[in-house]
Length: 275
Image (cartoon, rainbow, N blue to C red):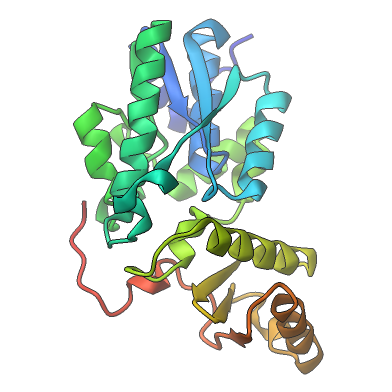
């Protein structure tokens, strides 16, 4: 049964109703989870296919979120393997690395759409993303990918509230990004680096930290913790445990950044133009 939309998402429901059928690029994050739910509400399972891309750069934490949301809300959901790590231009890790990742993703989704008769591909970009540096948006434009959340001017805060109203567990999930975003630009992206990063961040979550990043600077792991949790991380006993756990994963040196987590901190010091 279609759930009646709240006033703030009525425009989204009306827009989605204009699509014949859609493939949703579904990472399991706040935005794509809400879009996947809304599209399924409007178009039904027969006309909505939610696809999650499997690759070495995709955090298992998000994989589990995607699977959980798909199960709890009976989404039509599939996992596909993408090969961005096989592309030299992606592994070289230029500042527009995300472009090559999304190019790989949309190449795959376009093929699936053509083979299975889906009319459009949609992603979870929202109104707040317009002013951020997101080279993946260029790939979206090249492939004709639509961004319904952005098109109806829904912000991240609004999407969180609408997700809460819809009962989606992702509504308060911290922002995330692919594991490659933890590696400084122009430092090669490798499977081994990605595995080390994921193990280190999993260890931090097991210690109870929700907002955390492990920036991979070759033999140094720079740990960023969210502002609310940073005082706990800097307590001598806790910080010593963090360092010991991450060193045990293979990092010769571990440092906890006293400035805490900053979204896109590896962009600091370079000039970027919005995509």
